[in-house]
Length: 527
Image (cartoon, rainbow, N blue to C red; front, side, top):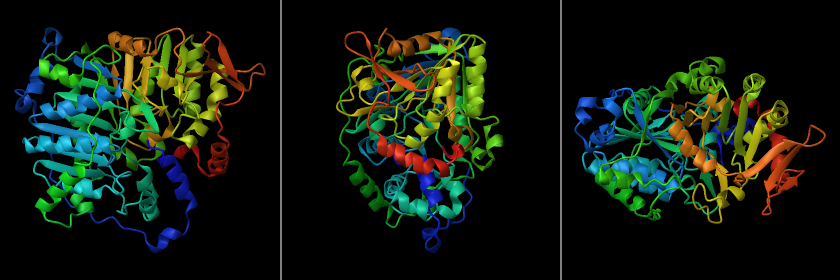
């Protein structure tokens, strides 16, 4: 999520009681849409990507899928762009956020160019953060072979996010429930999924703050499952074509010229290194060479039902991505390592962790520090449980805004601060979870999510390379002080010792004051 995040917007919404009555907007009635589905396997089997996806499958297996981690931003962007350039039949694209910045426009331009080659492009975007972007999405949809749809659209089309929300408050439930999925599928053969949205800060293009994130490249039968999941969303009653919501007020040819003019403003992408931090060459190069490097493994895909957004919390949790992921995590015999930017375990999570530790298991959690988070309210929700987690034996690391970027493990942060956005877990050094899901109530019962569990010790070893070393300075190690109540933050020093912070590192009095004001009116169900 972005800094102007839904949690704080929810708090703002609850505090606004009168202004919207005079200007509330109404969503126009929906119109029937033709059902569209992914191309059958036979129709894509002769494409370049389908042939490459099948190449190297162990023993011609029909159950194993191929996977590669994409921890480094430039390589993750290259994977998306390269798949778009090699697609021949279809691109199915689903994102919570596509920003009208350099990264977003470069990405949309590639979709437009793919469509010009005859590729069918289906673009599904959650409508929360599309304020001011109706023009770019509407003009994109004016091209042949491209259709843009919005998930759970807001009634107001104001260019300002705050104004849109204000004039949509008569339907706060609609504001609150979002599609948080992130997915790109090319020719039903290769896919990229994980934590990254399409915006500068997810791909090291922001000068202020950039995210540490994780995607995975997939091929094989799991991609067909992803396509089926995409189809359920695409044909959902909660989805509207953008032309029904924000009709163009210009001829088609003019709209196409307008999109091209907008897209030309994007600054070209920066050059990549020859190999990424895992010593692998870019996906684009491997596609050209005809040899895409992957690990072959069984996998389990979890995709939330789009109808989840209509259900009460308990019903929404049943069968959810969160329930599936927690089931995998709870199956650990020895150890679980969790990375989650917004970690609010709640009573259910605390009980689960306590039971696992009592069985002799180890649990490590990596999350954001207050200085790193873009979600101060979510941090406050995590803070409620932090000391109790330490008491039951959970090991906690907090990403520091400047230390992590210096490690060189996740790319060049320059002068920007680093923030964790990856959503992942490692179970017993054998199973790897990566997806869009945070470990909080919002992902469990409010938003829709997707996640992938890969049974691959080899993939886990790649992840461990990112985190290996006796004293990898990614942030702070937390412990309880001598009184057994107060938290201490430990930072490695250059001499091999520890710097002990008795108080939370950084000056955050204003953030704490705002949280003190907001938390009493924002329950955990909104965090």
